[in-house]
Length: 114
Image (cartoon, helix red, strand yellow):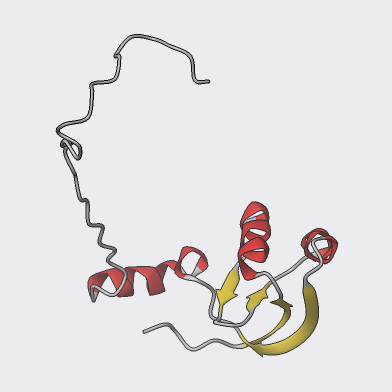
């Protein structure tokens, strides 16, 4: 469970959150990800970049719990110890097979893409 946050002055970002997250990531700024907004510790340059992208910005003062990448080291280690930070990936390998067994074979040599 994340540590209790203190009140901080932050920038609330609304709009295209994928675009906003990409921009915030380029600046390596601490960011809290909510379902309908991002909260960031924005400096002047990041604020200008977000504004230039047409995103809605508002200054707010509230508790801040940044995403784990930017969380304090103790928080990350605690999550790993309790297994809550584990990520799983499933890989499905699908071999080729013949969908049209009666279809004529295509040439295998180099050819035109036309």
